[in-house]
Picture (tube, rainbow over the protein chains, first blue to last red):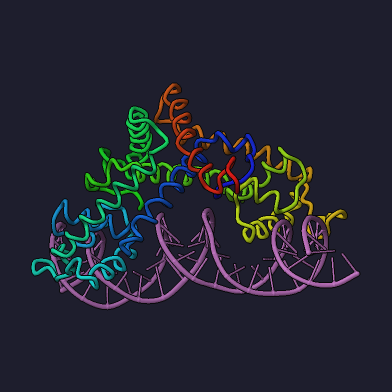
Length: 158
Length: 158
DNA sequence: GTCCAATGTTGGCCGGACCAACAATACAGA
DNA sequence: TCTGTATTGTTGGTCCGGCCAACATTGGAC
């Protein structure tokens, strides 16, 4: 579902799931366009940000932090390795693992991406005054978190 | 980006675009699962709802109302025609057009889908108390609408 | 030593959101 | 009246994100 030129049916207009979708669609359009200026996609940013914040990690570790699928992770790491944004080295202590480390070039790239992302957020939230923005963020956080928890029960046995 | 098992980086956690995405992802999972019980997808529901609310229309008209792409519309109309949920008839007044009409079977189906959709919304919003739900809907509406307008300027020259 | 779990990798699938091109038809302006 | 432009339906793609299954390798627990 994209953007209608005429009024969509009342049944759909106020539907929370649809609103969430439209918001995500809009946000993604803006963010994708911003990141495209640097020739990357959302995945790349998520990965670099994770590496920078938590330091070197195995691909499996990165999967757990980002929620990206294992199979997709391979491709993204390949991508970023080709651009010298990170290094893939075998873990001497566990030969199953690759240890992924961000490079100086990767950090530099990340700085640039941070800027682009910040601008994109600004553009996305532009229609709302600052107070409402915070409120929205708060509501979305409180909406989303319980749904995440309820999958593979954090705090339960597992 | 799916659901992480460990804390994702701070950079991403509060990002409005990411929150919107997570919300949409959750909503879609719930809605898709609900609609799957009736063997349909979101597109089918959107189309039937539009037909029921605005009456018969050409495919192009439906495209304008729903925001679904022309090429996708063909497939969805095919799908629903096969299941006798709608009829495709040539417009005698404009031989380019097909006039799409919902059938009684389509209406019946729609009633069922409405029920499923309502339950899905409930599940999606469950983490929030009623007051916050309304607030969220309001905020999302006010966030999304201006973005829609700014594309192909409603009210501008065009 | 055996068996199960985790890891990285390959190769897929699906759905939603697009885009380009084309034939048929309609319509407005010269 | 004719000519060019728009609209409509349709075909046949592309891309990305979100998955899943299977496999070989390696670790670790029993």
